[in-house]
Length: 539
Image 1 (cartoon, rainbow, N blue to C red):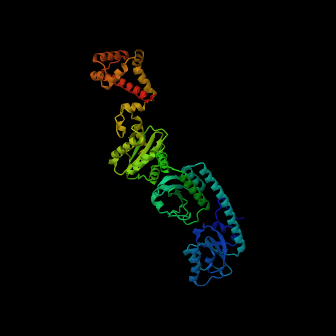
Image 2: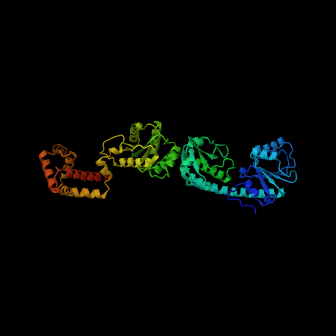
Image 3: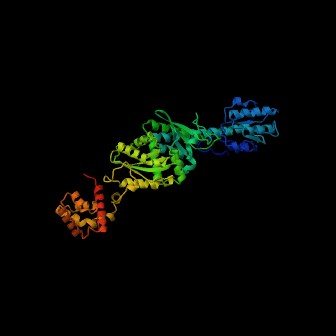
């Protein structure tokens, strides 16, 4: 029984054809081109002519008894050159009619041109061979046509429901079983689906490798790694490329893979023609979130992915920057504006929204000492683009992406801690988080809330019953570090009236305000109370 063709509808290979019973009877033996038996057989051609190339188009498996072969070695080499130049799949010579043994000159010529050469020790009916193989080919092509309709339906459905580039790339990889990369014209990897493979071996040194693989007129293996490449367009012309890392350098591409890649590239083009896609921002957001949440398998993976997106991670000082803003969902492209402004200044960075109200910037600076001017520039941009309430926080610089998640967390905590009462600066660092800011971050901790209540409850209740001002008086005293004259002035009271209030506070709380420890305890309680009140939105 002939081997069943897979549902993909591939052409049979020479190796598969040689396993057919009709050829097994001839006791086939491969004399040359053993490493090329995976070549596709597009047709079988029987000929006894010395100029077969005139009747071939490429991909044919040539059957002959060798009857017309000359004795002259140069003419045998010329015969093989014709087959190689036209792209014939291989040559099968049946012994017995012309030869008892295939000439060494013919074997040497086939080896030199890497043309698979097979001898048949026993005679077979060539008509049976052609009928069997052609039936196999036609059956496979029918299956390929049916599969092509299925593939077309899949991508049409994705296009009609507005699927994003991530889903289109993922679908392409799933249908082909091979890694897929979507890059722009500058060879930055915007999206990729590696099917569980690590990033580092797949996208490392991507730009250099991609430039070595040109976009060909038809989808055939390109470059030293045998990639399959399809162009993606946008309203302005060529935009980027969809790359299938199939890696079949010296073999025919899988016809189904070619169909999938073509349909996917069309779907991506349709998506870009439909309107602004912001794909670069989506790519930046994805990588930034993966870095922040430590989703990469290894530092090498993280570095390879960031560099493939255009960030020079190696040999640079890396800084995590968090921009906190109060914009709602009315403007979805705040990070796009920040990114464009940074790019105009020549700053190398990944920029994207990392959470609602948060824009992340990952800076790569060749000179570590330059971070402060860059941070100030980002602060000015944030105020221009996002308003005066925007807060820029910078985490500690690191030399490797393995430490950027911790730097990011520190920047996030710093941005969260800064309040309107904090000193006004273009940017903040973790050292700027002092006790008021820290307590503001911890204001939801019920232990702190209970502590503040225990310390101040008698003052609060007294003020509520008597419309009093003991709590403001205490706050002024603590802020003035115990200087009663300064505190009275800040409270807007005479010194005598203010001293009376301090005595009342000591009596109600049962404390000594001259005690440094008790004064510190009360100051912490007031700050906790103030932080909680500041968090309640005004109506």
